[in-house]
Image 1 (cartoon, rainbow, N blue to C red):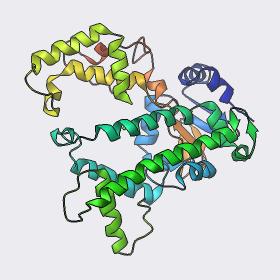
Image 2 (cartoon, rainbow, N blue to C red):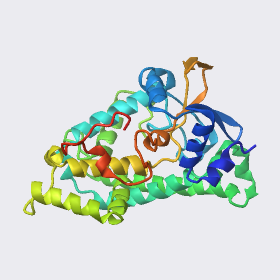
Image 3 (tube, rainbow, N blue to C red):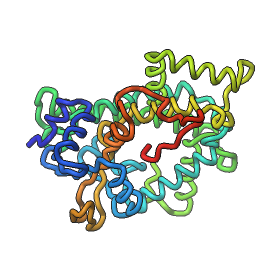
Image 4 (cartoon, helix red, strand yellow):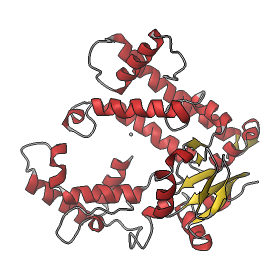
Length: 336
């Protein structure tokens, strides 16, 4: 009934459990979350041959209808959607972020710090709760929403509703604020405004069915506070390259290899999701000699690559130098 959830709970948040199973059963194995089986891929090679070389076969998503309705009121956005709806929203998001200046100096000048901190705090709390084995168990058995089982069941479903109301209130506040000075013909100031304009454009064209309805920085601060020699090296590099008379900009990126290495190592070690998104095959596939039927749940467990001792020796230690080559340049690590 609980499947492998007890093992995940024992090794919370779960990284060590996936490593344990990899050593016991190899690079590809099946685990059960409640009564739901899912195939786990644990090596870069397997992930490359599936999600990259044959990506269209794995674009399905595992849907727990009752959970989606309780938290989102339906299938919306990018993470939970599939097919044309997913492609449409993903394309819009990528194009809008490019238009807003993602990756250059334009975006860094936009000041939305208070809103970002508020949303980030809610996201942090929600991610921690949603990835907990007890939450996963409750979601796998929707009938538990009607039963009080201490830390299980109804208490977890009520928590979903509480988070939904908090997020919806935040989004509604943003929408109302943008509607006050809404100008269809002006350049979009941010993502919300761009989304509202696209929504209105489609509705004016008679399209009402297109479903148009940021943690790593904190870990970086924690790591460098606990590794003062890393902080000193970052400071030395920034003082040498930038000095103290101007702000750092995106154009400085290539001249700051050690700072980039610290960012890479933070992203590798923080690895924010204990379990990666659960995809489903949209057709029959073959992985590593095993035939999987359409509708099989497959998870590319990135933590097993990021904590692989062959690629990243002493993997649970914070060592930015692993991303620096013998000439002091930023080193490209293929599996990262």
